[in-house]
Structures are given as C-alpha cells and as structure tokens.
Amino acid sequence: MNKTRPAPDLWLFLCILGLLTIGIIMVYSAGSVLAFHEHGDSFYFVKRQLLFAGLGLVAMFFTASIDFRIWKKYAKLALIVCFVLLVIVLIPGIGVVRGGARSWLGISSFGIQPSEFMKLGMILFLSKWLSSDEWNITSFGRGLMPPLGLVGLAFGLIMLQPDLGTGTVMLGGAMMIIFTAGARLSHLGMLGLAGAAGFVGLILAAPYRLKRITGFLDPWSDPLGTGYQIIQSLYAIGPGGLGGLGLGMSRQKYSYVPEPQTDFIFSILAEELGFIGGLIVLLLFLILVWRGMRVAMTIPDRFGSLFAVGIVGMVAVQVIINIGVVIGLMPVTGITLPLISYGGSSLTLMLTALGILLNLSRYAR
Image 1 (cartoon, rainbow, N blue to C red):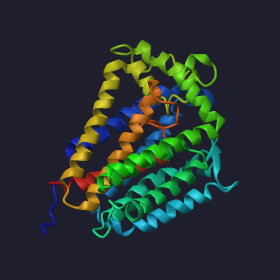
Image 2 (spheres, rainbow, N blue to C red):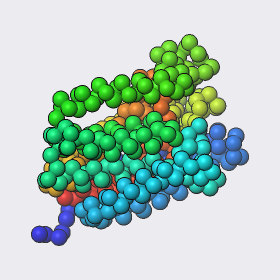
Image 3 (tube, rainbow, N blue to C red):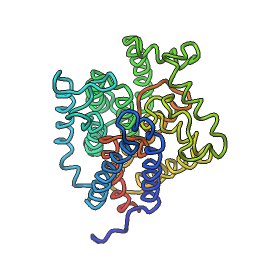
Image 4 (spheres, rainbow, N blue to C red):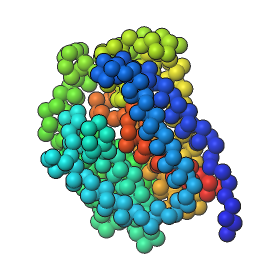
C-alpha cells in the first residue's frame, strides 16, 4: 500500500478556519459589554476563547496527522472513561453546578463537560461496533437494540444533570451512524414514535421544560419570563436587515440578550452583520457538512465512513438546534453554535473531532 497520502480536504480546512475566525471576532464583539460588567475586562471572554482555540488547533493538527484507524483500538476504553466521567459529575461536591445543571468538572471558572466528551466517545465506539461484518443491524432484537440501549444509557446519565440539549446532539449523531450502518426504516420509525413520546414525558416531568415549550409557542404571553430570550433574540435579528448595524454596534448585547457570547451569539452576529453575515456563516457550515459527507461516501473503510457520518451529524444537529432556537423555530435548549460560540471543552472537543475528519479526508477517493 502506498504510504503517501494526499493533503486533507482544503475546502473543509478553510471552512473550519473561517468559522473559527468569525467566532473569535464575534465572541469579543458580542461579549465585551458583559465581560467588562462582570470581570472589569472587555477582553475577558475573547482572551479565554483564544486560549481554547489555540489548544483546539493543536489538538486538531495532531488528530489530522494520525491515521484514523488508530482510534479504533481505543474506542472501548474511551467510552468507559466517558461513562465514568458522567457518573462522577453527578456526585455532589465533585460535579459543579452551572446554569442549573450539574454538568461540569473543574475548579473555579475552569472546567470540562463530560457530556461533551461523551458525544465524541459514543460516535467513536458505535463506528467501531457497527462496522463489524459480524454485526447484523437489520435484526431488531439482537442487532438494533444493543447499540440503542447503550445510547439510551448515556442519554439517561446526561439527563440526570440535566442537559437535554447536549443529550439530543449526542443522540442525533448516534442515530445517523445507526441509520447509515443499515438499520431498517420501519424499526427506526417505530423507535422514533417511542422516542417522541419519551421526549414529551421528559418535558412534562420538569416544569421548567414545559414553561420553555409554552414560551416558545407564545413568547409574548410571558415577555419577562419564559419568552424573554426568544423575544430579545428576535429584537436583535430584526434591526440587522441586509447589511447589519456594523461590527460592534449591537444594542441587544447591552444586557438584553442573555449570554450573548454563547447560546445566542448568532442573534448578535445577525444584528451586527445582517442577513449577509448570517448567510455567510450558514454557507460555511453547509460546505463543511457537504465536504464531510463527501468524505463519508468516498472513503473505502467502513469504520472511517461511519466515523465521518457521526462527526458531521454531530455538527449538523448542533447547528440546526442552535439557529432554530435563535430564530424562534425551536424551544430554548442551551446549545452552543459550533466554532462560533464561546466555550472551553466544547470548542476544544469540536476542533479535535474535525481534525479526525480532516484525517479521514486524506483517505477518501
């Protein structure tokens, strides 16, 4: 076999760098007011974002240079570690509560989210498991239920934090792998109906989730409560018009849009850069998904193909949920926008996963 491999997909690489650059700029622009108010330093968020972006780029170049098949050897170990972390974070006194969820491990403002690691760990393990020729995914009981049970266990641990958004992203990426591996549509359809009923049950079981649904359906029924975030987000997007108010000129970042540098950063971006700026970001994500799926369809290795599908699925589901929330098409879930929003472990893990995708692109035909 020829050991010389072509360079990673250039379009994919440029999209990653472009989105990361836009993200760093927007983290400063969207978060400068809040950073000065809470920390006395307008550059507080962007300095930390640059640090995590630097760590993430190092991790990305590292994973992009390593043969993707090596990760197959460590899939089981990675999943076990992820499950252990999910259990540890639930222990009072060890797991750190932020935003009402016990989903962090760390000291002071530095921490990691085990659920972020689980997203990648689950995708890796399922890709190895379902790439085996001995596994018959078309069988409901022996083929489909074991991987679904594993995914359900991880989802349940994440929900104990609780973190419905991250759990949904993990579930979405996992289901794309299971579908691509050959699961029957009839089986997935039945499970989809059961899953929808389960989501309704989860919503009804927690009053704050039910309030989010009612706030989503009619934000103006409670403009200072459950509808506040959506209303303020729409107030940011509307005035942006075609070309925006100008970089740094947002009005809604002045303590109107909550956490403008994280979940609702796209609304500030649309306010400052307008429809054109938002469209550019969406086109970059679309190209990233297109090139990633092209890798999945053309790589001759089944494990690599499923791994690429999982990574692309994770990105796509997260983008759809975040922007859907920001423009009022989905209830608020607390999901960040990949490569754009402020974040530590989420940004670093995303760049690590995209580095693996870049390595996979070197083997695509």
